[in-house]
Amino acid sequence: MSQVSPAPSTAPPSASASSDVEEPEIDVISSSDDESEPIYIHKEKDPIVIRGVGNITVFGMNSRFNTEYPPELTGYIAPEELSATLSRVNSVLKRHVQTSSRWLLCGLAFCCCSLGCSMWPVICLNRRTVIALEKCLDHENVSLYHKLGLHWSLARRPTEPSDRLTEYVLELKILPKAALNIPD
Image: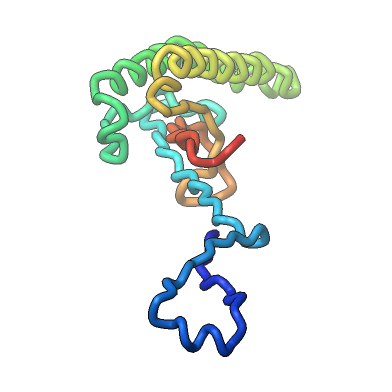
């Protein structure tokens, strides 16, 4: 930070009293190194959460996500682009969750006979569904959303009524812009 202070007078006190009228005052600008300008770090905004609204839920994964345009995204992305992305995500879910639900019914039917081992295919299919969704979201991020300063991710969050159950939700994070006034 810069400070402005008057220059010290080098003339003897008797000489300065007689020449006050003619001598202009000179300001010396000094800077102190111990005072630095405050660095403002932008606080990240809370991510926009899109919850599942499907009829079938298998291990926290809903059969589809809400395709309504959130008002928080106004000015970031067009509603058509968002609905196209969510329709691609919902098509991945449609393929995988229906298969998982069929295996879940078969696993429940034979659970007593197999001592619970018939549930392993459902767990593996659920993991495969999560991986397929993450691949789809990564493709969307690379092709469009990172250019717009947005980032999709699949997250596991507690459900609203109780914290004991969790569900998978889509999070759309607004990436902070690079500060150009801070040196490297």
